[in-house]
Image 1 (cartoon, helix red, strand yellow):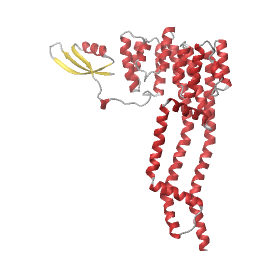
Image 2: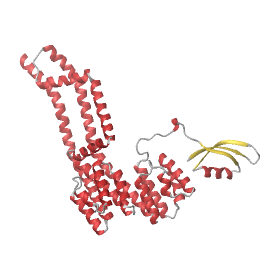
Image 3: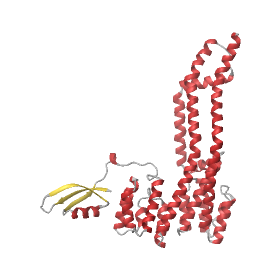
Image 4: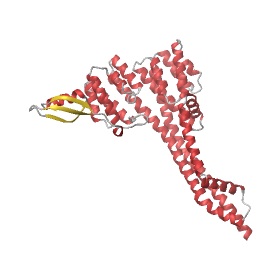
Length: 402
């Protein structure tokens, strides 16, 4: 809902000022007239900087967008017009950015604009894939089917992303706890023994000297360690914004041990599902490939998709460049080639997406069962080294004393 400041005159001639909430300006005017008021002026209130909602990245959660697509399709199936459905969904959605965008879309629809043109004005809320599929749905008259496909697409993509996140979260949390435990031991426990060993002037094992040096460094030069961590994080984000840097990072993700295959399968599932949904909605193939290139969360795969688009412009099959790409297994390229030959590319891509989404789920389950004992062994090994560095000199001193 938008907020409007009004200046009106009542039937008795008295002038009044106030505020009213409405979907748009015309709705606000109509509401004031129903109250028997003559509108002298009506201005939409603009938020100040302190009142503005600031969002980083995608402002609408995937869950909210999925619900929106599902509810939109249900309303259209029930015979509700796009205009009325947009107004209903704007009033009940929980997402503030989506609500604000839908209010604007509703106002644009009242002016006679097409729904696809209205949502295109809000690119941060409605992705290019949504806009392109809606436009194709308008042309084919199958908005309901298009919305159903969009809901399925976002649901599948969300599930795959969450699976990959869950596989990465556990080792990151355990790794952080391991580092915290090691830092605590080096900073709080080891220095107490260092002073004792120094007073005894005894020859210390190499492992003890190394741990003592690390402890001194963390205790006396902690700011250098902190600056080093900050520098690494900042460098990662700066390099990721560069074209070549982003490509190198994407390549390293695909080649990483253990998690590289998981990243590859997730990206292939995302690419196949996106292209299948666009193609099934009658979006032109070249336009669909451009959208997929932007959507896929890996620059290496985006590069090969761009090469496929160039091949298609020259009259060659879509699958030819993909067959030469190391990142695509033979299953993917063969299914795409069969889909091109039989005219069922959307079905073949959907099958590929189903296969790799299931493969991601199974891989995540296997990784969880494998990573847990490995991380525990690693943590025990690191703590064991620190404990050994303390105990060995003490045993040596005890033997000398006895």
